[in-house]
Amino acid sequence: MPSTSFIRLDAVHKTYRLGETTVPALRGASLELRRGEFTALVGPSGSGKSTLLNMIGCIDEPDQGAVLVEGRDVAHLSDDERSQLRNEKIGFIFQSFNLVPVLDVYENVELPLLINDRIAASERHDRVLQAIRDVELDQYVHHAPDKLSGGQRQRVAIARALVTSPLLVLADEPTANLDSGTAHRLIDLMLALNAQRHVTFFFSTHDEKLMARVARTVYITDGVISGDTAAEPA
Ligand code: ADP
Ligand code: MG
Image (cartoon, rainbow, N blue to C red; front, side, top):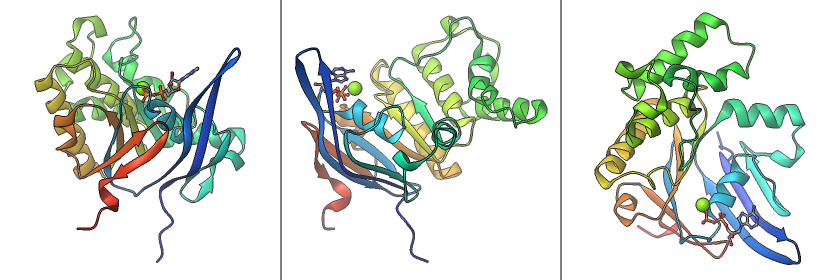
């Protein structure tokens, strides 16, 4: 059976306007991600990494070009379909963790499931605890984020991204605020979740040491894809 590509970007352009000036963030970026892949997106600061991830995550939309998820152009989805894609099929992990400080670990992880009223309370409870177990934070279920280390907070963010059982997890420089040992353990955890739960990961970084840990690296420079280890001959 021919498989349609999982995620595809076709010549995506995005320009930000700041008063009189325009800032081109993406200038014809094209890319394909296959289901189950674990891919790093690498480029200097300002090269368009966050903009690219936001396009795939339907947080922002292209000026030109298209983003296709499972063969469907996301621009042609209804508002409901697009929010369902964003809320249930794609998990996000941000550099600054973005946890809600007044909520404990359990409540932070539960948040994405509260948007979806079709999930019964008992199933929600099971899923939240499973996601917390998956990131090995069982001992911290009722801790507030400010009682946790940076690495633990980022693991809460991973649990929150995984609790909806998304097809894809996008992570924007998830290790940028972590020391090197903690960063490597976080990658270990993401690799294990990729292998065991078949979660597709696409994460940006500019840490050379982390690139060596991943199967595929996509390079971005000045808003275009400038290299891709998957495209190189073996
Ligand atoms: P990276 O994540 O690789 O650092 P970004 O995607 O954040 O790159 O930014 C790409 C370019 O777009 C940069 O020049 C940045 O200054 C600009 N940019 C990003 N977001 C905005 C915005 N909301 N308004 C104006 N310019 C932006
Ligand atoms: Mg960025």
